Image (cartoon, rainbow, N blue to C red; front, side, top):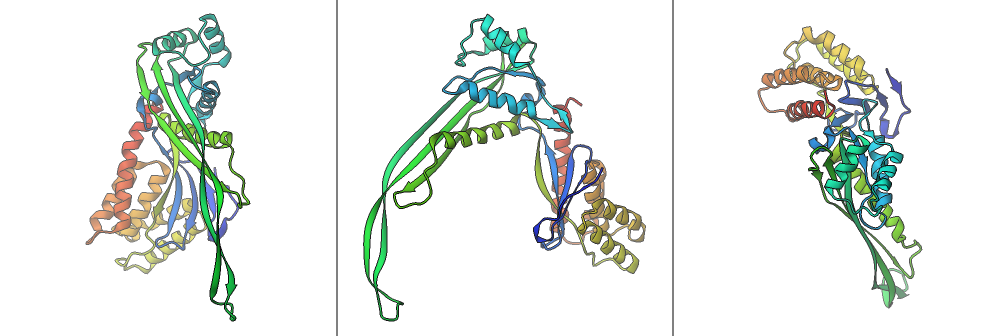
Length: 352
C-alpha cells in the first residue's frame, strides 16, 4: 500500500509503505545532501527484554504525591503501544484492579510491596504488574541581573560616551521529577525490571521581561511526559528515524546502459518512488553484476523490505569489490549487521 504525502520544504517529499514491520516509512529523499539519502522509520527492540516479554500487565497506584495520576499515565501509554498495527500489551481492566484493591483493603497511596503486587496480579490474571514511587519538587530562587544602556552618543551617533547601569530582580523556577517503576513477575514476586528516571527543567523571568514565568504544575507535567516517553522506549519496541545513504555514482561502470539505469533509478528515488528505483536497479544488475553502486543500493532495497539476510549478503559483496574503504558502504555494513541482531531481539519481544 502506498500513500503520497504533501511535499515538504527544501525539495523533500514523502511516501510511506510497510515493510515487514522493521522499516515502515520511507520519507524525505534528500538530493541536496552530501550523498543522496532516504529516511526510514526503523523498529528498534525495547531496551529491557524482560519488561517487553510480559504481555498482560496491570499498573497499581504509585507511591508519592500524584502517584495515582502518574500510574494512570503509565497505564494509558502501555495500552496505546502498537507494533505492526497490533496491540503490544494487554492491559487488565482498571475496574477489576480497583475492585481487588478495595477488597484487599490496599491503600491507594501506592504503598504496595512486590509480594502484595504479585497477589493482586494473580487475582486479576496479569502476568506482570507495575508498582513504584515518584518524587517531585518545585523551588524558586531569587537573583539579580545587571542592565545597561547608552545615555549619550557622539555627534555621529557611533560612539557611546556615557552609560546608565542598574539591576533588575529575577526569579528562577526549578522543577524536578523522578520515577522508579518496577515490574513484578506475578508468579514469583520477583522484580524483573526497575529503573530510576530523573528529569529537571528550569524557567526564569526578570521584572523587565515580557515572557511569563512557567508555572510549577506546567513544568512538572512536561517532566512527567518526558519520563513516560523514556519508559516507553525501555519496555517495548519503538520507532526511530534512520538516514540511509545511497550511491549515485560508480566510477568503475563501463557500460553506458548501466550508467543510465543507475541514474534513472536515482531519479525515481528522488521522486520518492524508491520501490520503482529498486526495480530498475534489480533489472539492470546483469549489466554490471560487480558494480559497487548497484550492489549497495540493492542492499538498501532489501533492507527497507525487511529482508536483512539478503541485504547483508549484497552489501558484503559490494564491500569485496572495493579497492579502498568507502564510508557509505562501511556505514551500511555496520547498520545492517546491527539490524540483524535487533531483528532477533524483536522476534523474542514479539513472541515470534
